[in-house]
Amino acid sequence: MGKLTKFVALTAFLCCSQTPTTATYWGDWGKVEYCPEGEQAIGFSLKTERPQGSGDDTALNAIALICTSGRMITSTQGPWGNRGGRFVCQSGSYITSCRLRVEPPQGFGDDTSANDLNCKCSNGETLNGDGNSWGNWNSWSSPCHNGIMAIQTRVEKPQGRGDDTALNDVSFTCFRKRDQMLQQERAPNAIDALGAKFVAGRF
Image (cartoon, rainbow, N blue to C red; front, side):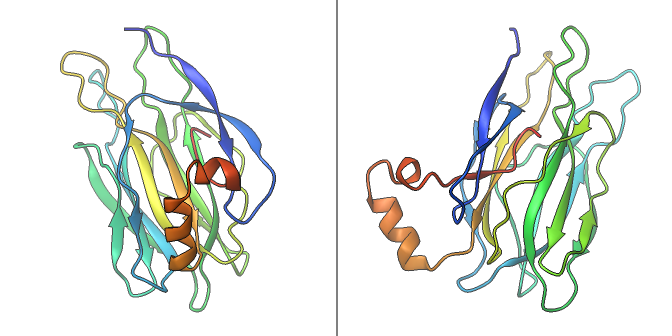
């Protein structure tokens, strides 16, 4: 089965512009997971499969956000690899933007898709993840000036004898009041109307 790429919009809930970026789209989007009410993401942790030599590499398998209280939230995860370090903004600061490191499709070679994640804090600090180094860094996502409150990941299920890639893409929800989120969910085509899905995607 051939694997292709497509363009996705990299935007923020609180921003009006869109920045095109290429992203792999193998797999399905998982459930959106939220920080506890009133909390923002202040850090993250990655689950990564290290290089397998002649075996099938998947690289990044999961991204967990660390909320203000210390609770960790994740969307869909791949089954391979181990959790790495915890990268946290300085006290009083929170995550506003991220970028993903992605390996482009390898044709008949071994695809890994997403490899690593970096995030910026509201105080200007950059948190560098501990994922793998295949691929290139995509552009920074449009900033969520009030912080990030939710995560959703796109993960390819195990392919059996096929080529596994695990995590392909990630999107975040900018911090907003819960009643505004509920109004959006009730409105038809709400996301399109707002122009507001912040995909930190296949950068």
